[in-house]
Structures are given as C-alpha cells and as structure tokens.
Length: 527
Image (cartoon, rainbow, N blue to C red; front, side):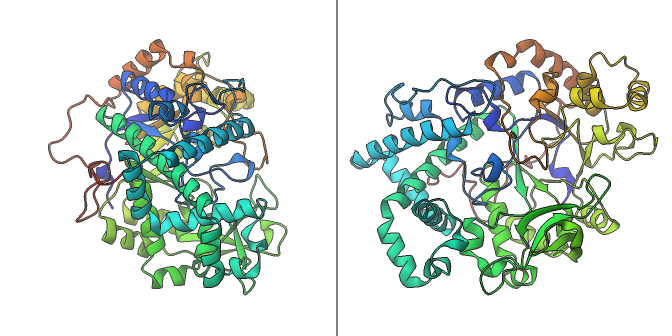
C-alpha cells in the first residue's frame, strides 16, 4: 500500500449525527447535502466521518452491535416522504433542541416512522423499490442475515446481551436458529428494511459528494463490542472460553494520565484462527466499508503490531501485557483480495518502534495532532515544521478538546510557547491552528468543524472515560455560513490544497474497484 493513492488536500471532521435537521439528530437529508455544498465552497477535498454503525454503550459509534450494519437513526424521514413511504409531518410530534442530539427522543420518533414506512412498503404490490430491496437482501446476506436475526433476538430478550440468551440460541444450534428465523421473520425483514433505507440514502449522498469532488473518509475501529452480532456469529474468531466469555480484553497500559490504564473490555481476536482463514473477516470488513467511503481511517493501528491484553477477570488494565498482533500479514491479505486502497492510520498514544516500523513498511500515512505539539521540545514530531509529507495533520480529533477550549485551559508557559511559535496574539487561536495545519507539509489536513466555528469545550464531541454526555454536539443551519466557507477556501487555496489545483494525469486513485467487479456506485444492479 502506498501513500500516493491520496492527494494533497484538506477536509472537515464532522459526523452525520452533528448535522442540522428536524428529528433530534443529524441525518442524510437536506443538512447533509447542504454541508457538501459548503465543503465545495470552502474548497475542501475530504469529509471525514466516524463509524456509521449503530451506536452502543453511551451512544458511542465506537461500541457498536455490528461492524457491518449502519445506524438507522441517520435515515432521513424527509427522503422517505419523497419516496411515498411516509405522510408529510405525520410523525413529527416532538419538538427538539436543534443544538443537541437527543438520542432517546430521536430513537422513539424514528422508530414510529420507520415502522409505519415498513408497513406501507409491505402493502405495496411489486415495484421498483421492492426489487431493489430483494437485490439488497440477496447481495448483503453474508452479514445482513446474522445481524438482523441478532437484533430481533436481542429485542425478544429485552435488550439483554447474547451471552445471557438460552444456551441453544447462544451457541447457534441449527434447530434453535431455524425456529428463531421462522418465529421472527417479520422483525428480521424490518431490520433488513432499515439497513436498505440507509444504504440507498447514503449511496445517493456519496454520489453527490463525489460528483462535487468531495471524498469521504470512513473509520474502522480495530476492536468490536463483545455484545455484537460479530462475536455471536463468529465466536471462533475471538478469544473466548468454553462458556463463550472473553478470556482477555483490550485496553491500554498505565501511563501519565491513568495510573490503572484503561480497560476497554472489547474481546481480543484469535489472530491465528483469522490467519488460517486468510483474514477473510477483515477482508470482508474492508470491502464493506469501501462500498460506503473513499478513504479508510484505521483507529488504534498500533493494535495490529501489538495490543495490550488484560485478563478478563482483572478489574483494571494494570495487570495486562503486550501481545503481538498480525502485523503485515493482515494487510497483505487485504491488498491481495481488494487491491491497493487509500488508508490513513491512527498511530497516536504510546507508539513503540514496532508500530512505527509496521506503518513505514506499509507506506501508510499516520496522524499528527497539533494540540500534542507544544511541550517545549523544538523537535516534537507533531510541530508543523517536523511533519512528514506522508502524514495527516489534525488540529484536534473527536476525543480532544476543541482548540479554543484547549488553549484556554493550558498553563501560561504553554500558551506563551504556542503564540511564539505561531507568531500570533491568540485572539483567534482556532484559525491560527487551522492556518498552521494547512500550511504544513502533511499530505492531508483535517479540521473538526467545531474549530472552524471557533467553539469552546461546550462543543466537545467526546471525553474519553466519561460514561455519558458524549456524542451530542450539533451544528445549526446558521453555522453553514458562506463567509466562513470563503475564508477557509482562501486559506486552502493559498496552501496548495484546493481541489481545483491541477492534478497529475492518470486514473483517479479514488476510483476503487475490487479486481474483476464494478464499483457498487456504478453497478446498476446494486442498491
């Protein structure tokens, strides 16, 4: 894998849940298209999103019940009205604060609307939509069948984890599985219907973005949740004991910030079993994401070199140890099956020489965060002048404070260092960081939308370790400001990152295709 499949450019980090819209949460409707238009005006090449999967514990997109499914809360009800599946305004009886995601209210309102749309869809005679749905179920059956059955069973068991289900269904005994599929056939069809609605809406949005020269950066978290369709349907690929409980779980070791480390609780992979299978599950995971996005960001890349393994019985991560990951073999398997694909790796945190060596061997761009650059060391690897061309620089990430919030919370000596380095007075620190990122040699510069809007920590997306109150920030319609777009566009143009810049001749490296197949967006038989 080589970095030249990516082009010098810049983009915005904004999850679709943060878009403006009428139903308590951002979705794939008008707000998403207007945001793409804003990106075009701002001369941005990339739109980075977080995982598009259903949210899990704490409403986190990094604790999903499936690595392959999508979040039904992102489905636009307005588009369903346009499809003739909903009556206009019939299900909007809850007023929402447009500045905050209301997961509970949005879930209740959209569930009512989606159930109504499903009923109307079932009452129709054979139609183009019905044929599209059947094609989707057939082409995606390899993951969709298990996910929909898992979700229906979870509802049947009051939302309880699969590890507490009756033993015959927990262990997927054929007789029990057959009975469950028959008993829950309508619920299974409903959940497949929701996945299909997301897919057709997302494909239309992605086509619109690509036609306007905006490429979407998606996200693969390395680990999956234990209470997920993935672990339930592929227990042999995870390190589980005879009772199907984890032997060890993921985390990070103790450090300056945490005396006990962090015990994440995700089950660890059975890497030798995955290798024996040619890493087929991982190949499928990359293939599935590449049907939705143009560039893949791998979260916690260091886990492919070595991961921190914590005994499942240990209360903290302090008792863990490093265990070797699959290394290059996994990426070679992906490349063999899917060809060269554009990847950015998150290599932040405790990075040992083996992690750096793996990234360099693969030729993949790593990440740099400007908030980590100012520690008094002029050779800090994250300072703009130190950045390698083969990297992606961020003013901050979804796990950081906003730049304005970070700067205001720093001690005086750090603020003095920042201002001296930037040659600014600090009155517009967010845009000072944006300017530094754009003018750096890094191949890609990504800016959280909160920094573009110069917002403080009230707009922070996630505080790691805090169990609730995260993932709730939303834009307002007035934030899609033409003046902001023009100002950012000028800085982007002057830094040589504008999409309108002349490009080398040759095929578009983003035109990803699996060898021997059409891209899903261009295949009229795939919805």
